Image (cartoon, rainbow, N blue to C red; front, top):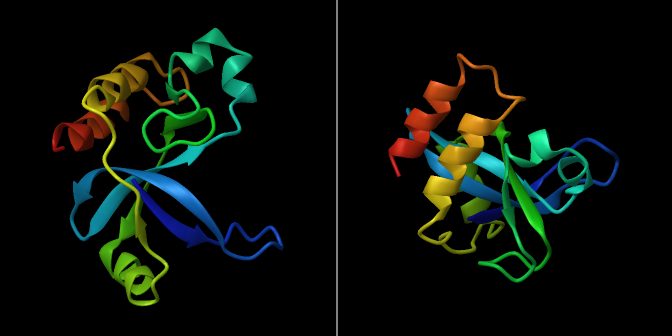
Length: 128
């Protein structure tokens, strides 16, 4: 888990957000943004089956939090080094031993990840 400031271009400027590092590919860190906005997942059993849900206080999450593998992206190492050199990079810890299994299950169950994309995401996860 890392925390870095991200600008979502919503007028609020950069805001520190939590990201789960799933793996590494080329010159990038493959990340998924954590979110405490879980209402959309709670409203649908199908969507809920496609995320890893953490209870408030579990691991390093102060609030109930979802990790949605459909929200995966690559973050260039050079950009991460920039955050680190500006002291805007926080290493928050490592998720528990069951995380990898729970994430693989979420990827497999996801109704929002295209079927042909799932093996690639699982491959990144397999490198942990």
